[in-house]
Image (cartoon, helix red, strand yellow):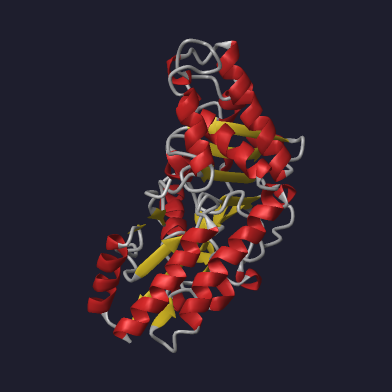
Length: 362
């Protein structure tokens, strides 16, 4: 399809054309059932097969150990900002947060409503242009968990390695880089992620949680806010976002057919290198927002020395079929989100457009 946009939206974001086409083929009649999967009971065998297959694929692709549970929840990562401390932040303990930007700040703000919080490290002094150094992260003895945001979508920074928090559970919001690279899940107590950047459409939130942590859900919490409720009911306690989970299933099959997470990580490296090289070789016409040591392979943030030129860049890029290159209002500038489903061709086209724009306006 030649009329597909060069989609660099930050989320909801690009999905692979073949995944969309498969969903289109099955949209009205799912596997000969005479109805769409959106019309099916979530208690039906046909839906449960999709649901369980998505969990199994996640376990396979992300090498999730047997003592972790995979949950499909609703409310986005923003609900997890509160649900996590509700379940894990017990009396006499504190939640430690490494502050790396906009989303980490939102997470700690919610935790403060639940119990004691401690800033374990912060890169605010550098304008959130990098992630906190691992050696700067202080783990209090009475910490219930240490929370990090693995990739900051707005600032365009990403942890290149993860802290060792010893016996204190490490928790990560991986909303914007889940399954974009291999991760040792056993190093984490909880990983959570909204699906709408790398896993599928908006509407479903993935939670990977170690069983012993989920077993401690306070019985005073409402049922829907307790991890153990969803574990006992295989994420089917209430009606799940069934179509979104079906799309996640298709997306996981696409990742597997693309060579798995290792191959996806190599592709992401190649894609972002095209754009970062264009920035670095522009003689200062373009400048990266994130410091090179913390550059994200998911969200490339950059500036042009002149704000009027930035506006012109966005206008001309839209005319040439590029979508989503305007930076977030909190940071400004420009941003290209290069999630798993963004093809190499889109990044090649962007690099060429950037070079041409510089030639005409430099």
